[in-house]
Image (cartoon, rainbow, N blue to C red; front, side, top):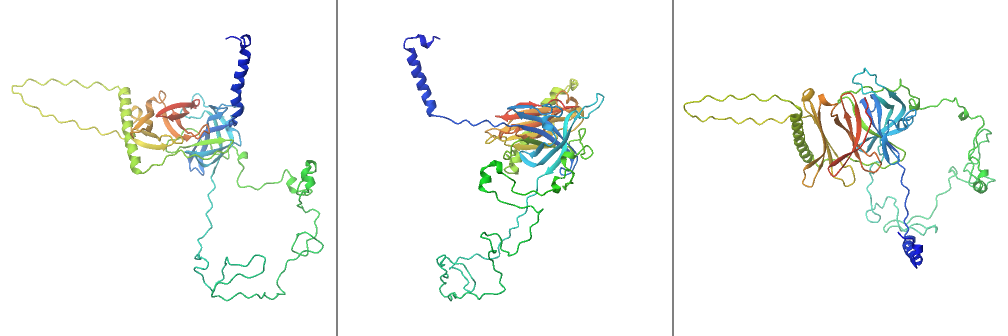
Length: 481
């Protein structure tokens, strides 16, 4: 490329072009707002027993969205404890984006599993604290009125007092115009009652200070309230407290006992909080998503309610058929069945007869246990997303687990976006996927599906984004064993 300054007449053309290019930019200016600095931590709150009074509980850190990236919350700035598990951090427990209560972290612990330990699942950082449910909404004290509403001059009781728009001019001292057919109001005022209390100014004062003649005597130690003068308001140096402090007040005593309900979360120890250890069964272990954010964001409900029971049954039947088909493919690929025995040839007969064959009975569909079907709307205007989970009966290879994530296409048929099929004997090869919930991990009003990937002696947590019947894994934690 040649230098424009060495071309004859090019310098003027270059200046003109630059002027023309810059003119529209000066005329059309756009205000660019500063990108919101979002710091959001997401975890899984586990407990056994009643949620209001759990028998044991713990918080497992999963992801930390900071500087526009998802990081492992269990190891980020772990000096000494991770940033997501500092004492005093408050998490909001959510169900599909709707708050259930808060969880205040009192302390965190780093557990290390011994090498000779069995199936414990206690390895890594865990947070412990207190669950605080949402405050119950106060019942309204409003009661319906027993008085029937009436329109003036249409349905009136002449014997009852009423208000009328036909009043006298304000300030004239006259009475309202009486309703036709009623007696005019008398202009006589009631006689003065000597026992009637009256309000008057106190002597020696020009301001409206009090309605009582006598004031209590001044107390030297009594705090007083005063209004700042305009001079003090303009000059910060003259700014003095509006309440005169009391000398030797009890509030200045650092050893003064404080009254509060229960024990403060910050002072709780291991003896005050029952810690959850190991991995209880699916029937006893409960899980919800926990979100901690420095800013307040409006709630976003990601759940999708069924239009009616017929829609629920229709989607369930389609996903059951898809699940049985996937289980059959998995069983055929992972089961080494012996070859069928050879059928002996029949002996020759003198007379040829036609043998009657009985059709083979139709095999019954394999029963599926602990079925779960959940519907979500992961984004505004997004397609409905369904998560189906079930398992078969049996032990070892016979007990197989299936998890399907599907979206319904334009023809009303499910399109599988994510599938997971495994058995109890090969969890270390293929962990089973257990749905936790949908969570907005990046504060974008767009939820991801959080799954627990449970192996034989370890587990991980992963986030999946589902768009256009395709699932993409956006984050996965380290292995907790």
